[in-house]
Length: 157
Ligand code: 4NP
Image (tube, rainbow, N blue to C red):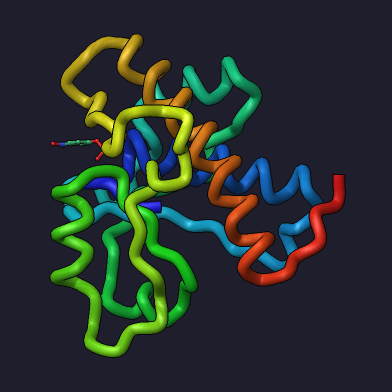
């Protein structure tokens, strides 16, 4: 899960998707991580507003620390999911030639929402984090369905 700072959107996506994977009993098959295209906040915990909205919905982000996206991530992971178009373009620049990872916009997997970008909530109020969480929950469900289908994983409820 990739955004700009790795303290708001991508940690929320990380926490939600990780929880969905664990709830399906797939945590031994699917590794989840997040990163930012910028290095401003390396080592920082998620923004307190992101942690609060996550906690309210039953997700724990307290173990997460910001890091920067690296070329190596495109070899290690199968999917790189970007939150907005700027993140997508930046990720394309970091991606090494012939990399194995598939690069997608995360909201491709949230077809019930008209938005195609997860808006940056950093400079706004708490309601922005509520909206991010709505989008991230929908995209996480769609992504998990897609991954299970593509890789013939059994969903254990
Ligand atoms: P994120 O939000 O990309 O969702 O983590 C931001 C966090 C920090 C900044 C911008 C966006 N910043 O400019 O420091």
